Length: 354
Image (cartoon, one colour):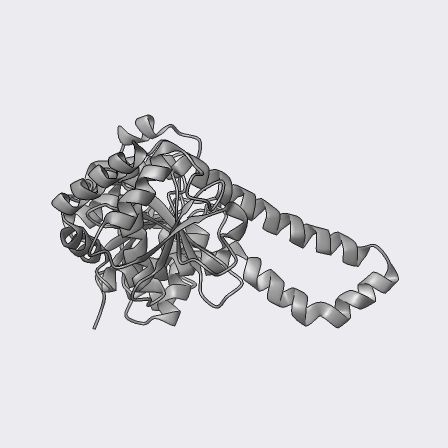
């Protein structure tokens, strides 16, 4: 059975058409049921498709020459939502012409356009940006929000937890994902009022398909003992950049060490299988594809510097979420929780605070 086709913003990202089309072709090679709507300059897309006849037969081109700039403000980009490749890819989801949209373009513009076109799901106040991060265990950890909302109240954090748990059940297959709030300590007295209140609400809520497990500190995110890490977008983005920077620091440090002497170069040859495994584990392309959760549709953000393997992974994420009916799962979880239950949990949080 063919999946609903995926709209690709072919003009986004550092290298644009070449990498986006090559990534879609690789995704199609891995999954023959994938179909695509390639949005962008048709001449450039057709030239790129010459190298990928298998993709060409499974794709339609929507011509568009206007592109959202990498440093363009979201408010400026919104004015051209109906003329840019990014905006048209998102609108294809809204119109039902595609099941999901993938873009490697400007994150702020993608968020603004997605929210305007698709709107926020009933029961969700704000959408959140979620991504998969590697851990020491076999499973990945989902972290949200990673920058869509710099300030969040307790209700927002509870909703993020619900959405993150639904996402985790799809990609990791866990019946009750272990969910924790990012905090400066694991003790119950630590953290801001918003984090404290969210913790009380999650403990008091009933009917949630998750195992809320208190707080987690940033140095434990990748240890493998948590499935979903929830935070406001400001803290989450800083934590993510610190993790990415640390990974690059370790790999660069190893490169410098192995180049320092003839003995070190010999040591590199001996340890190459282990270093290759480390490089593969830390390669961001293997975990590419952040998702805007809480919208009435699936939109996936590919890293701007992703190679074709990274783009293919982002496409696979989009297809999997469409196939698993992510938005329906989140809606079902919200209905199970219920507004009355959420209000009761909020009252418990305020009572606990006083």
